[in-house]
Amino acid sequence: MPAKTGQQYIDNLKKANNNVYIQGERVEDVTTHPAFKGAIDSMAKLYDIQHEKPEKMLYTSPTTGDKVGKTFMVPETIDQLIERREAMMEWQGFTKGLMGRAPDYLNAEVMTMTKAYDFYGQGANPEFADNARKYAEFARENDISLTHTLIHPQVNRAKIQAEQKDANVALHVVEKNEEGVIVDGIRLLATQAGITDEIFVFPSTVVKSGAKDDPYSLAFAIPNNTPGLKYLSRESFDYGKNAYDHPVASKFEEGDAIVSFDHVLVPWDRVFILEDSDLCNRAFGETNAVVHMSHQVIAKDIAKVEFLLGVALKLMDSIGIDGFQHVKDKGTEIMLTLENMRSHLYKAEHNAKLDKWGMMTPDFEALNAARNWFPRVYPRLAEILRILGASGLMGIPTYNDFANEEIGPILNRAMQGKNVEGFERVQIFRLAWDMTMSAFGSRQTHYEYYFFGDPIKMGMAYFDQYDKEKYKSMVDDFLESQNIKKPSFELVK
Image 1: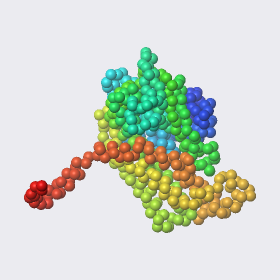
Image 2: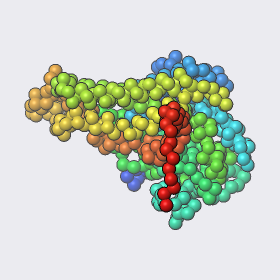
Image 3: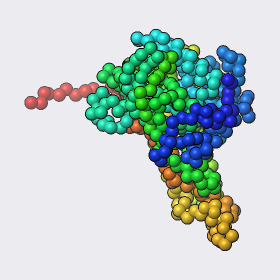
Image 4: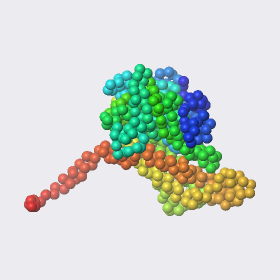
């Protein structure tokens, strides 16, 4: 099947009838349930955009000749790398960067398996290389939408998984038979969970494991309606309100879920890594999956800052504060963030090189700096939007208030701005509120802060891998060039 349409995406979800729970009840149809419908409609729009802009979003499959999603395309030149990112930006332009797990995120991981599949064939299971290659082709040719899960339950972070009091609460291997591997336990934290076709179970991008954790060291992919697989969704931040009251939550609330595996069978041809902590530790780095996923993330971050800047500028203009010194300074902070992120992306793409797998791979130094910096700065951007809105973000009437014949005219006059009536000004302020202060907005800030994991651990890893010697040598060379004679010192007793 070539690139799917939005209706095909919805039909697939209906047919799959994934095992999804929310508020203590099993969901009969996620496509109509109020907690999921807004996000599903937005996802469907993403798939339709592929067909509305085929020159941007589609390319010819190297195996079937069908038109498939360009976000699966393996770039072999810098121009193709940019072309692939421009396809991503078509989707991010629609979501405004507010869907952190739009399909292009995991499509980047799948894409690397197309070329780097030999990595998975190392060790005791050489057949896993073919599994990875075939799965990448299957996902591309069927336009599979994916959720994923990376981490164990947060029980006792001071101990490795094998030393936990209830070690087997985490996903682990129970047995192996002719059909495949039986796994059991819990994984966190699947975004878009039951509103996708399949789940990727992969190792953490941040937390490394040792040999004692081999039973928990897995990588595989299975359909979301596999028997024994349950998604236990958190409370939805889409409250079923109209697009005026909750302009972004009503469209882009992805949801997050705990994933429960109750003696789930993973067929042998769907296994990529099995009980091998060493391969898990190396997977994202050696296949360059982390680089291509970071490429997508920085594109997403740029789209997000572009939109946040637009909201800030509209808010400033609506109440005439854009001439004040402190307001301009805060707008400048957002603008500097945007231009910095664009510069990182430009450097990453134009310094790209072919890797050993044959993929044109962006400069990771630029992407790594950006992905470490953005979680630290995004909370400040959200804070700026709140500061600019000030008390105006507290007194924001609803659509129904304005629709009321008695009080609507009063509110329209009372809430007027510099050049807009009250209804239009409140619409801008509700957007700023929904991006920063609502449950959805608060989740956006928290989500960005922990997007790749604990920013402190990420920062430590960044510091450790950074090339520090040349800078220390620079200082040594300078000090030596002074030709300062060292005095002789007597030994102090």
